[in-house]
Image (cartoon, rainbow, N blue to C red; front, side, top):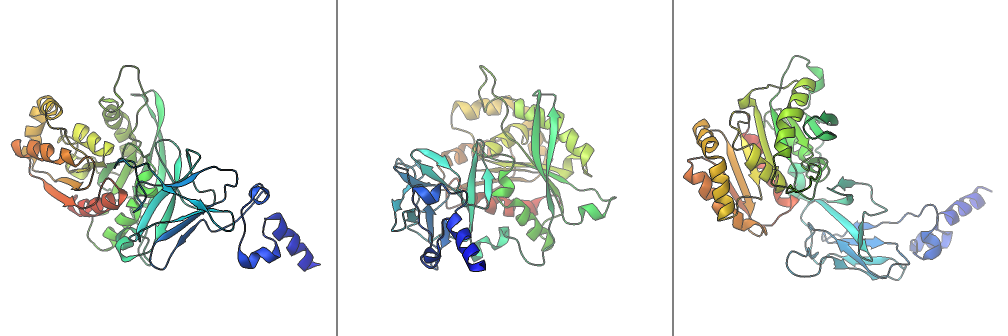
Length: 389
């Protein structure tokens, strides 16, 4: 009787006993059952990664990712995505042509032109709109941003607040270091860390692994314990206002988010104990609202963004001329980083020239690679030890 019931259960799941040994098959009937389990991601011994998707009625499926080696991104003129083909079990399947360094990667399946997260996935990262799945490839390269046995862990919480500036409810993720809950008298410095244009306030932890980077650096004595506030970098669209070139984010940051953080968390609310950094769009926010505010932020970090040569750089300099002089006089930490294969790399030279012309001392880090989380984790890992010394 028990055997018969177990067989019925397997049948309900699309896994008949004869299919258990061979693995599940994908067809219209199995895909429509209430539950179907299969391995959608397999890391091979050589660290190439194989993907599968059960989509029996799809006409075309691609693996979509801007971070996985060998998957066309569309930035190089090639059609984006790695084409998948049906295998013997009816699954759409593909294997990356190159091994992947150890790390976390976002991906999606593009089914008939529409990106979707992996329906068999267990880890996800919110983007500006929607979500992508996350896979982990083990390897020594990922040690600095991976959970390590025995290393005390901080906490990541979600802070919701009313923005009087923007007239809406806003959200931020907040990292508090190990031991924060156990010592009610200790106060901590704060880093405001902003994501890029395709991301959300969830991204610095869900794919950037910032919390693990912090835990590992703090445990090794390489970084000071700190609070890290990761705001939502996008602001509501307004008619006639450019989505990126406006003051909305900066106004919300200074007038709403920072007071809320200082009210809710045990911060050290002084300039020297407050920093700002960001990648791509978040780096642009830092250039606009952090670098010219030495009265608010001591250290600043800008990753993978900059000024365009010509009118853009000239306008920035004219708008912030006095503030840049004050930044130079402050002699605080300024960290600037770019990957040589980044499609925005041309911005590095005019930005460095602006810093040099204003006498702003800075640390410049140039790496290989492009506009990816592989680089941004490295930049954060190198920036954090410079703070609050």
